[in-house]
Image: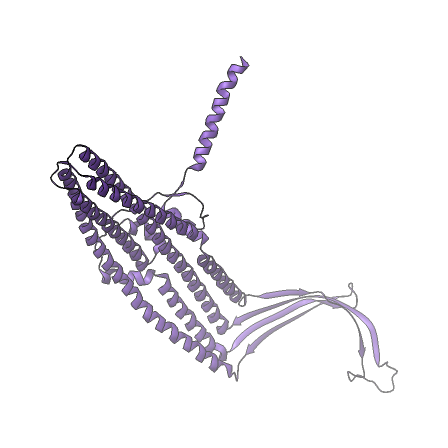
Length: 445
């Protein structure tokens, strides 16, 4: 009875092991969204930009601390001797020693300082906050560039695998033609040269298929490297190369929104604001500054004899001569002019990228329409040529020529679909806010 139970248990264990091995060997289905998410986590430029943002935020925090009260406590315990003669203390005709001590003093005291009016510090704090915002925009720009690059790599892999599918279909057609040529020869309708010609065409298509598969696998290696995955990971692309029509867009309508959304342009705006605040801080170096300071504590020869004492002070600082301010103002003004010129160039660059993306999108849509029509005609030509050859009307040169035309039509369609997808990626980048809107843009919405 026990032996009979062992057989089903063994079979169950074998099934579980086989299912586990099958699950482990299944390729990882990678969507574009997953690829972008992994790329953002692994890209060095994004990680470096994030640390710069954190660094700028820390600088702003330090600037803010200069406007807050600073409090510290001291508890000195001192032993000292004093030379009264050196201090100018002497009483004639009295036997006072020149050196007194050693004696000890004990104390504990709290000190507080608080700037009340300091425009230089205030403008410096505002400049630091704008610098932090600019670093955040640069960080977002780095993420948008990664999205653009990863999407382009994913698109490249999609195109290569579409080439594999097209090559496989051509191999199937060539195999059918080879079989047809053999049958026609056996029936006395075709000649041996027709069979040989069909076999050569089949060999060529098989070689093209091998090359297409190699290029597709190579594109996956590049993709996995750029998204932080091991190049040895077996991957299957979950998204397929498809055409998505885009709604018409007027450049004049979307350009203001693109300028407001583009993080690279927004970073320049924030850098200019930070420099303006630094210029105001430089000019404020001549303004009066008001600060308060106080301390409270006790001091005595022993701990038991300490008595409370206090001190409070309100200080007004006025800079009379500071030659360094002129050089600082000139330096900041030069930096400000440089940023403004960069903004002018960036504004033209954004408009150019936007117009180019829309131009490419319109061209790709027209190209895809023509490619679809050409592919349909090429498929009909292959079918008609095969029919004529099967009926003995002509040799298979027409069929092979039709197959070549079909190959070109398939490649034209893949190129058109690739151009359409790449134009949509480019449009998402040109419009700005890429991370939040790339999925809708790629879907044609």
